[in-house]
View 1 (cartoon, one colour):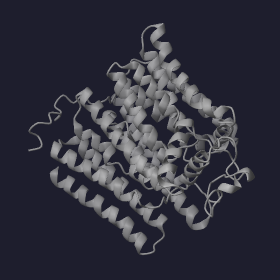
View 2 (cartoon, helix red, strand yellow; view 1 turned 135 degrees about the vertical axis):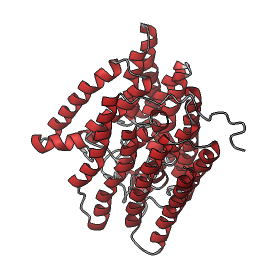
View 3 (cartoon, one colour; view 1 turned 180 degrees about the vertical axis):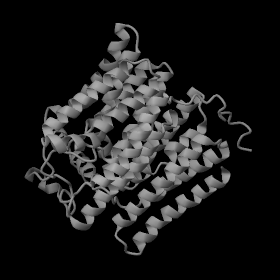
View 4 (tube, helix red, strand yellow; view 1 turned 120 degrees about the vertical axis):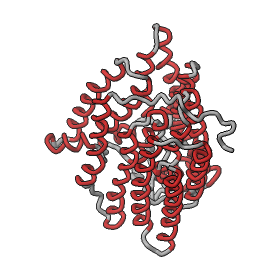
Length: 438
C-alpha cells in the first residue's frame, strides 16, 4: 500500500507538471486540460479502491492531503480553461461594486456601457440574459471583485479559503462518526474539485462548505445551525433544497419538522430581499431551467423517443419524484438518504455539468460508495465535448461518452442496492492523533 501511495504521489505531480509543460510548449490549453483531467481521474478511481481496501497511516493521510492542497494552490494562477463561466461571476461583482443590482440589467444592456471593457461583457456567455446566480453567490462575486478586479484570482483566493473549511468540516464529521481519517482523501485527492474549482473557478466550490457544516451540525444535534447552513447553501446553488425533505421526515414532532424548511426559507428571503425591489432575481434562472441540457443520461434516452424538451423534462421530474419519495420515507441511514437523493437528482437531471458532481464528491469521505467514486471520476469524460467545441466551434455531446461515463456508474449503483452496501462503520479507525504521526 505504501508503494502504491508513493506511486500515486509521483503520478499526481507528473500530471500537474504535464499541464504546465503542455501549455508552455504551445499545445492548446484545452488539449492539455483534457488529457490531464481524464488521466488523473483514472488514477483517482484506482487509488480510491486502494484507500477503501487498505489501511493508511495518519502520516500518509496528512501527507497526501498536503499534496491535494498544494495542487489546488499550484493551479490557482492558471487561467480558466474548460469553462468561461467566471466572466459572468466577475461581471456581476463589478456591477455591484458600482452600486447596481446585478438582477436589474442583462450584461450587454446599454445602461451598463460605462462598465464595458475589451473582455467584459464581450466574453460572457448569453450576455443578453440577466444573471441566474442566487444572492449569496452575488455577495461572494462582489467580494472577489474587490480582491481581484476584472481577473479571476479574487475568485480563486476565496475558493481556497472555502475549500480549506470544507476539508475541516469533512474532518469533523469523520471524527464525529468515528470513521477513519483516510476517507478524507476521497475528496482531497479527487481531480474534480481541483479542475473545476481551482482551474475553472466554478461557484459550486463555495456551496460545499455550507452543506458539509449543515451535516456536521445536524449529527451534532445543533439543528438550528444546520438549517441555517442549508439556507446558505441554497443561496449559492438551489441543489441544497433536496436536503430539506430528508431532514423534515427525519425529525419527530410538528414543531421540529416546521423548522427544517421555515428557517432556510426565512434566510433565503432575507438574502434575496435587497435585490427584489430593483431587479428580477428569478427571470433568467427560469429560462435556464426550461431550456438547457447537457450530460443527462435518462433525459437523453427519453428525449430520443419523446423529441420534446419540455415533455421530457416533465417525465424526468415525475420519475425523480417516484424514486425520491421512497428514499426519504425509508428507514435507511441518514447518509444513505442524502447520497441516494443527490445521486438520483443527477441521474434524472437534464443538466449534469462536471462541476455539479462536486456536491456528490464532497460526500464520499463518509459515504464511500464506489458508484459515487466512479461518477466523480468518469464525469471527466465530458471534457471531450468542451475539447471539440474549443477546437471546432461545434458543441456536440457524444453518445459513446455517455456510455463509458454512465454504464459503470449505474452498474455499481445497482450492485450496491442489491448488496445493501451501507456506509462503513469503521470502529478500527486511526483517529487517535497522538503517536500515529511518529
